Image (cartoon, rainbow, N blue to C red; front, side):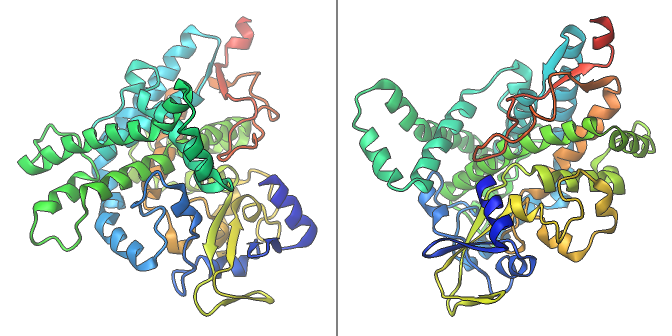
Length: 442
């Protein structure tokens, strides 16, 4: 990420990183690569990862993606998110209430694990109809740990040359730790299958009014509906649920952490945001939050600088080749659009390293095109409405319920610099808050 950015600064918007792959930051080329027309399909690297084989996130063929979007798209629409809002809001309220109470008993509190608990519990309930109990029990669920291990195995398999062979040979090492790590994907599948069996039973008998809502419940109900146009097998639903969790937990946790840090770090931003939120009174709903222009700008600026995934989006030049800027690229050429560099392009964003929400109040078309936090237009993340809702509710409820909380002295610009990882993370490994009275009492 950082090395690629340095190369772009030195050599310009087009750099060749291998005999068959290039990196592109030119906004015109980015627009073309991610256009919903003349689609550049996703690279085969998505298939090689292999934990989920039938998720929309790793599908390469555009027609397959269109069919899957029609099957699951309504579940993640703004309208359906409204029906899920009470459950999401309950998790957010519980998270912020626990943070508030913990800070009454402790000098400082690291919010990273609490935001992770919240993201996992929300996604668990939406995907499986039941949460993981992390907020309630104030600890990690084994599923989360297995998912982390399985993600590491998936990364080795898909992104390291010879990774699949390495995984194969590791399977013959007679050591319990190696075997436990390699079987993490199997444990993840087992838990997911059990959760979906419960949902399937709900679908078959007609779920009761007390049932928790799930975006996949309606999809499972369609299995027995002869009039349903788009149906999915239980294996496809399982892979979508897993893909949903893989794509939406760590990334959302990190982005929500940096959202809180950025708002608290910039006092004028916090003051303006609190003033705008005060116009809502005590009745905070996501529908009303969506109407607040400064909040929208704060969320967008956070996604620009602190999107959880800042690496490139690998695509492949389609049949017939393509002209990108001054270069004609033959079919099959790998094209990657590095998010970190594009989001900081000084030709598109004035003072690109500054956190300036006001820039979005009069955004240009190039600014809108350059934001790839949820992927490009042709493969935009189906879960973006949920992610944005969580971000809006988290910061709004935190500022409303905890007006006397600030960044702890340990939470510095240096500690919040990006650590070099697959997903961004604070170099200090935490983001601590404290009561504004803490330093006075100390």
